[in-house]
Length: 219
Image 1 (cartoon, helix red, strand yellow):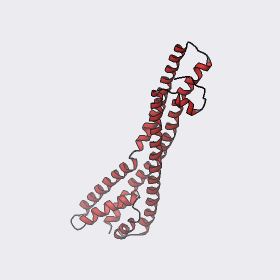
Image 2: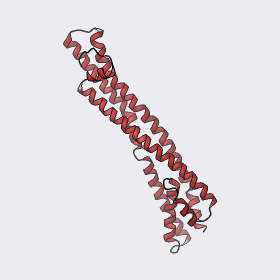
Image 3: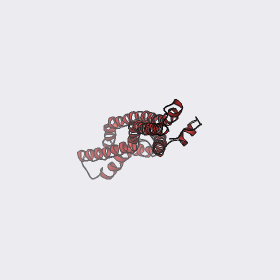
Image 4: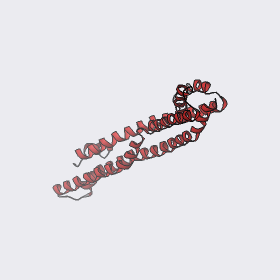
């Protein structure tokens, strides 16, 4: 790092070494990806919960699986309608070929597969937020440590330990820690929110699976 007259953030960045700049670039990428994942997943989870609730209203009002299936086509993004359609397709293909016990088993397996698929779909990319939340502060700290090491090396070369010589380099180094926190905090908050909502959807799927199966077999 070199001593320079500017005191703004841009001036600090231009005086940073390549390692610190690389750390800042990586953290910036992490931050952008985290915000993109949060935005996409927030929309998907919110839409899934809303359409699932709308479908449930129809589920308890319409007591015919064929009409329910037609109604479920209006809720293409809801997890519960997706699970219902998977069970209905299995039911339609097997209802004239199997006993009630066998039919119940086949429907239960189809529903279970779709529940697992929905869980994977909803949680896809969400663990990346946890990774950013756990690693970004340490990556930023690495950049800070490296920057401080370079700053002390420059002090030795300049043979001066005055505040004017030390402060710019330390300030540049601390930017990496601040950037790591800026990347980590939204990622952790987004991860906690999304996992809580996804967990709620998964519990709803488990709770209503028996109702789905009984709806098929009571026709």
